[in-house]
Length: 301
Image (cartoon, rainbow, N blue to C red; front, side, top):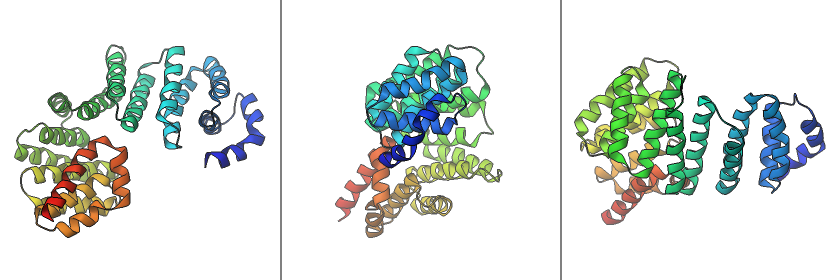
């Protein structure tokens, strides 16, 4: 717990604060716990001098806003900290991408449209910057697509995903996003299956690409569901769960596939999974799918 973390750190707090070479991990943890316990100014005094001495510390300051969320801090505290950091220093493209990701994490917690629009604002600032790397451009495009999906801008998300995939035909994540957003925007499901199958093939060729493979298989399963192929979708989702047992989107997809085969009892059991229910609570893109599933289960009796 944060109280226990503070008890462990307290005897060392002054030493960490006064040591310019203190571990980044310890400094971030101490600052995070200080903010959670209501002492943001002390956290600021811990971080600000380090950034002024070495601008590379700015990335750690930004990441503290995400640390707050993972350690049980409030979205409001995370947003206030991030606002304070961004008002004090001018980030480079890499740190601007970090800010956009942190904004998205906050928006995913709050479900607020205004918070989502702040993600778009950060990405627009990034687009205006020069000397961006290809990796940053890719990350920014994926964040924009995700944010547009959460905003319900399905046509914009699909268009940007198509453009990303067209420029990166060997990128399985880009292809997976193109397939998913095509389905969400009402495009041809069979074409989405073809795109997702290409993503799966590419991911299977990468021996260290488990995340890429589970993402591609999940996209394939959703495309198969949209194309009224629940048996094939079940196979795809079970492959995901064989690789990542607690994959929430795949659990949800499996329940949808089972329900489409008149297996409502099995679908209902999955829908009651506490871990799935918690994931739905914290991930807005899953909520509408989950609500449709539970409504359909009740209708099926």
